[in-house]
Length: 404
Image 1 (cartoon, rainbow, N blue to C red):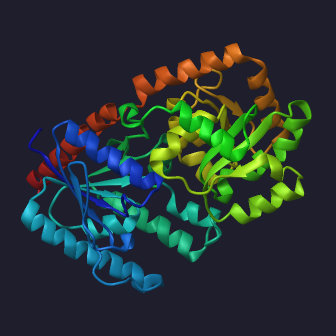
Image 2 (cartoon, rainbow, N blue to C red; image 1 turned 90 degrees about the horizontal axis):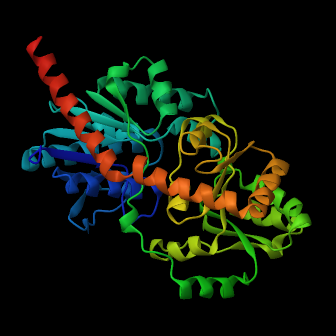
Image 3 (cartoon, one colour; image 1 turned 180 degrees about the vertical axis):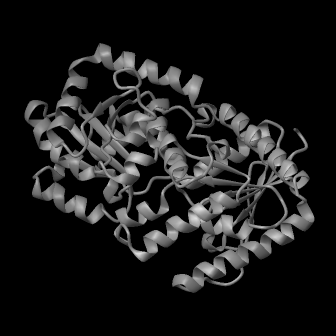
């Protein structure tokens, strides 16, 4: 197994900062640590031809010329990626092509006479609905779903991020024998611990001394339900005036959220830190007492699990999250975190106040979360699952060839 060579295709990668990029880097390094040889191509949507090396992994770029808008640009993306793949296959001679979603990467890898593993990380059509780019059932929505299903059918094996996606693709006719869940995980050794001086500096910067902090660190998309958190804050502060919100990140909802904070007359108690360098994030987690993830009860939130709650658990923050399917896969209510009804500011406020009033219970939950990360959500365990998937893909391709 140490000599197995895997060629990965990514939509984008570090140094672009996103959950997708960090998950990709974690997968690659965990596989290398297990003795698997990995090589990487990023799609033209990375919009760069600069080769990037992180640790022992080098990211090759498929970008050649800028992509046009619309369907033509999507076709360009597939063709440029395929051309780069053919170059890499000739020089690298991989045993497996591992194409990570979206489906354009899988389309580029079809029929290259090498076993194909396709990894589905999200419901891209539903993400487009949630961000207002299309409507559920639209032509774009149906075409995106059809292409994802087509690639999954063509692949020798399919990896999905979570149980919700597994069930969705099983409904689309993908055999259960081809589907494997490899969820999000945390490399706990890769994070530095929060620094006391850094925490104090942040408290001073945002005027948070003596405050109890509710944190949210990530992208400000509508489906994250941050308006629910904002609407809960006046209710919380009626009982405990120490409570403030600290947000790190940005996104399309930022302007709306700032306006809502003014409307609710809590702008002085909501602090927008902007986008924060990854190396600084441990100190931000050190400031937060409770991390809140109030995702809305919509299709994508029910199907897809986020990464950020696991990060919060690692940094010993109490995790409060809305009771949607993606969160239920990560959080055992009362054992590793606290779930509250989605889209309900009053329920969120009650959960926050109860957690603050019961330090003993909160400490027990944080300890349970740490055990969960160590036993269930480590990248070395996930890397072992990938190796099993690769072995099945090679076996399936070999069996198919003998039956011709």
